[in-house]
Image (cartoon, rainbow, N blue to C red; front, side, top):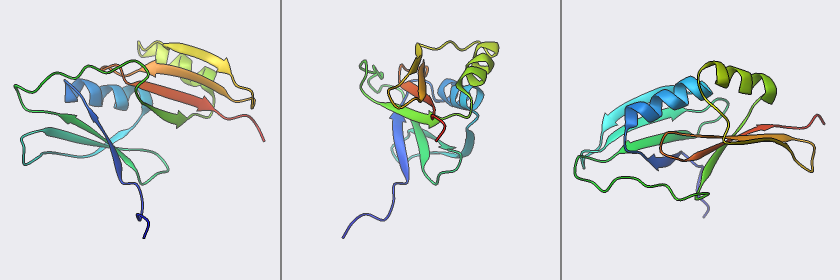
Length: 129
């Protein structure tokens, strides 16, 4: 029997408030809920547009080993309507791309921005069909 659906993806962070601000300010995501886990971790869930899946940010209690994100370990990918306009808005908020924009073989445009802990966020403007 297959699973029913994907509910959320968790990213451990060192500073849950700083990371939540990034996802809100840079990407326009909204906090759907927050709470403390039974183990004492601070959890913030972010709603993603046009999707039931959420992003869970998790800051472990004091004394936990700090997060050190490996290069190119994982990334989130979001579709944007107009990459050039989105990039200009990011710059106006003080955020810089870490890579791109780059045109792909399919005619789409991609770029990357780094979240506070070093997780990559891919921005994709799909090619016109």
